[in-house]
Image (tube, rainbow, N blue to C red; front, side, top):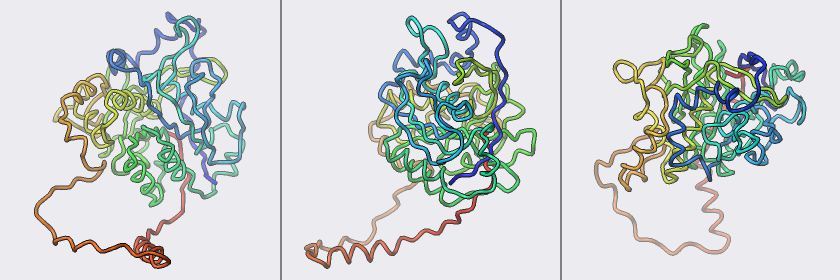
Length: 382
């Protein structure tokens, strides 16, 4: 099974404060920074499923109750449901994406970017405090690739990957890349954290660097690039990643930092766009979020912030102006342009029947062969 000793997103416990609208909500600057409240005039994410490939997700948390679907565990060992070392990071990310709060009128606790979206939890990594982490450090596996494919097959509209490998030995893996392309072809928007290596060499992080992925860097409440956030060519957009209020299975609230949180904000933004315009392709969603991002860097884009801070409200408005024919765009990561006719089509022949038919199909299938090296470096959550 999977691996993975991952460095945890840094957490700082909030000072004691009542968990109500003028306490926790007042500290949630992220939703306002991306204009989520303006997007809520159109949609709050109803009908959209966001797969959270992470540690576990606490489906009993009051801020998430009813918004978490039955998921799948691709690890199979380590901490178990109910253990705090099982679901801290995953619950935090799920809360940023789709928490609805609790109490009278859901006015207490945290509220996510898309509070009416559903979370599909897919366990593909271990918590940093998981005692099984030591023996998992040097194991091999394909949990991430399997999890991406499974989420796509379950109909996930958005796949959130608040994780990554930016170690010195990090490299692209054929199975993961193929899984991402499979998910994109199935219509799932794929979002990943750009990496937390900004002060450690800005090494390339995977899965953020795979084609078609919306890679997210982190900014603070002033829109300034966070020093820890990796700056690389694959950066698409930025989002809040400093002093982000997060929910925890222990029923307390914490402030966290990292491109993990930033990716979760963008997954929530993508959920809002898909809810308002369900026929958009992943390529269109990625382009809309890039084209409508606010506070664009000089020149339109740079490696620190991509095209700027994500703005789902602006993306929703821009999507309404797309021509109906644009919904037939090519899959994310690939562009095609027609430049002339090909050979004339042969007259159709009557399809073979009986035992010949499956043999013909089988021969064709043998022409499609993909080799994948199933090796995995230590994967670290970012």
